[in-house]
Length: 325
Image (tube, rainbow, N blue to C red; front, side, top):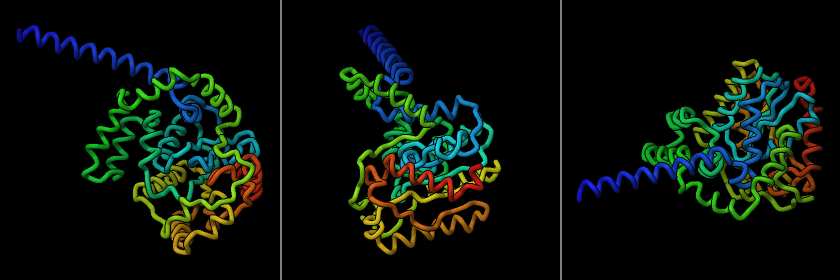
């Protein structure tokens, strides 16, 4: 009886492992047919970073505000936008590391991050970066060792990471279920092609204008900065300096109502951080002034629409002409 019972348990475990393996193969190899449309721009960027070997004089580097705001073709034929929506300096450091393993270093890198996204990695790090398999195990372990998680959080973070890495059904079942009722492959294919043609640039907000202030910035009295984000900001800068890349840290445009409703403390503390970076790394360029724009530049609360991106990119090219040629 006991022998038969144990044989049954072993067979059950084997069946579960086989089904899990099939599930994992589907998740890792058919992402274009499974995930929502944001996956396409992530995957296109990863493919370009890890598979292409073409030379770029200028790289655009940052999160979604940079991905939407800078149109590569308006700067030069050899400019590419490797920004990723939701990315912090952590993800982008490793994206640049991977890029440099496959490409000759660019001459110039323009870096830009959303002002209000320096105080957390909780959302996109788990729900996009790891969900879309953007980091290797070694990279995640290095992030943990560098202090991304408190001591009492490390075990839970590691467990969570392995659920993503091993394609746990608890993480991906909903995507596969929803994909059965939607033609996600066609949507993702179109988005992927758009990202290819635009050299990585992608719009998120498409309204003709956006007038309200950005409450994710104006709702905070003080500028807060996670140590891990600051660490990887400096690591990214040092990575560029080591490779002879000129770094330009630019500020993303915000509308007048947002700027007016930001607390004095927040404005001062954020720019103090920028000035400290400029002082610590005298060979880089840091814009320590806010970019105030008209409402018709914005397609949503923080992303530029086509009008705004065109004007902003044109300004960048003129402002930094000597570094972009």
